[in-house]
Image 1 (cartoon, rainbow, N blue to C red):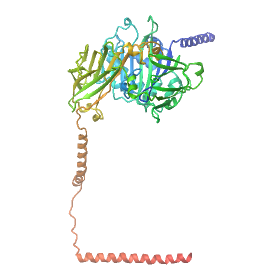
Image 2: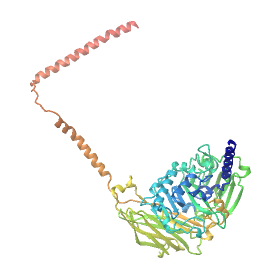
Image 3: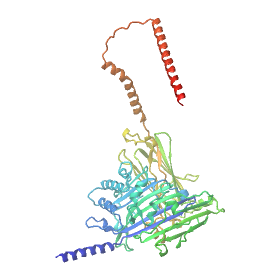
Image 4: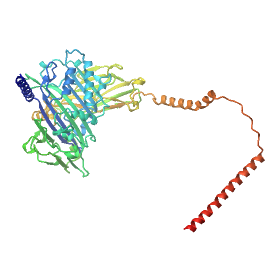
Length: 608
């Protein structure tokens, strides 16, 4: 009997071990480095996990190998098809730094697609999902379900799943939710839970692989630009797409000032940026690569140590690659040192024009006073990169309800001297409702020239309990978003995230689709604000008056008044005589004290 139970136990243990080892989860670690023409350096750490979609099914027992269980539980319980979240501090400078691998607006941005035919409606699931995701990242994402921050775009945020249209028929915009919090601050409270979602952890907080660079990074939060993000979507497992997989991507992007005291000289190491080197690779990763983009190699002389394993060409840009799974690097500490000098024959203007991006976006607030205002958005196309065909721009604005947008003031013109007016191919406008929903504006524009988008708004009066704790700081208008696909003759010059695969290894090996999403500046506008100090002034003045009057009133109401006996009047001559007697008594007491101390001093002298 006992032998039979033992055999069954051994059988189930072996079966569970076989099931664990037979999982087809794939984990990749990549670090992309690009020196910038302004003396900064762009670092992008990317961690990609590919897992079976069965972990999102609710009717089976799940085993989690490399995919984070907390993310799977959150997605499964709220019926989420895909989601994208970013926490960013700072603004990406397109005109100085070029194009990032993937952009993000300042603050927090969340957008998600939900599965249809669920018991709960999308709004309640969106609220639950935002609260749970905010708890996982220690962020204030519970505010995204408010009537100021959430909308349902029609065209700007389509599903990024690679499934064919026949398997992804549900693309109704009622299933998508987009929200942004421009005031959200990013700090170590967000980085610590974010790192815990990665599989390679040794000894608690000591991580193996590339994430070990983040354990003690001195310049991580002293950087010019800092962005955390997570993306989850479904992809095809093969070319025929007969089976699907889940792709979960986690990325950290920073831009650090690496200029040195020497003029036209830059120098940095892993230890100076991250505080440590890569001690050992993650044993669970199937790929650990470090890419160094040498787009400045034509204008700068680079010196890299150690020597790269191999290099590739992305358009006209050389990219050197370090494969940390190489036999000669497996059991050694990897440290990358880079220093480069600018060539004297290259001017700053020529260098900036050479690496300027194809599209640059800037936005400004117009108007004065606290009643009327407006927004001007400038979209500049690179004139040196000749546009053979018209480029299609998808412009998206989400504006809080207390900025009442006037659609009839919308005007799109070119930036040349003629100021030719352009009619958009399509306009999608959802007016806002006070305290219910924000304004939503989407434009489809085809153009070959730089354009200016202008419209006006009116500022609403808020109730006194609707103002934030610092009302005089102002109210934020989220970034404008421009989505487009770069022409084939331009996209090959930039390293962009491909929609076919979020992994950089596959994006570099195949031609990118050229899809980019650009974010403008956030705007800070002052609304009509009452003098909140007046209640405090009234309270202080009233309390002061009460305190001054309280003593007298208290004496009048609590003490008994009675007539005392009248004292006899003392003549003036008697007062002078009393004063004379007091002075003589004090003089006599002083003389006695002086004569008493002299014999004691003489006795001390004789004794010595």
